[in-house]
Amino acid sequence: MNNKINKIIKMNTNSRFSELVLELTKKVPPGRVSTYKIIANKLNTKAYRAVGIALKNNKFPIVIPCHRIVKSDGSIGGYSRGIKEKIKLLKREGIKIRNNKIENFQKVLFRF
DNA sequence: GGAGTGACTTTTT
DNA sequence: GAAAAAGCCACTC
Image (cartoon, rainbow, N blue to C red; front, side, top):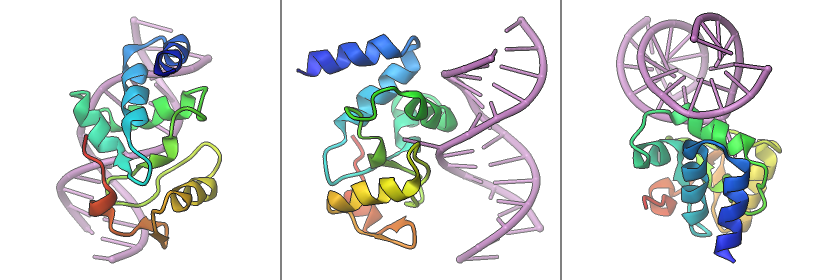
């Protein structure tokens, strides 16, 4: 099951970086969020922006919970289908959002 | 292989 | 505290 997902990810990422980004994104549990910064730090890099690029370019947003990745100040960030959709998905998982910012950000933040 | 781009972050106005 | 600027580095073409 998970192996299949990994294969799919590898298929669609020629570079190691994107692969790792997607791997980490997958590990964020439901109801929690993480940030581009945390992921970049986890990969020992400062390519915060490249993390976003990797998520944007991933071909399988179904298996990758991209919506659980937000900006480091708790605001939403971006989403290929529009931030409205992202907010909706987050709310569905029990995360409260006000004025495009996540409430209890520190609480729901998942630090790996 | 160089230049432009971006779902970011931090610092400075 | 909002807005702008600067810094960052992988990605794409």
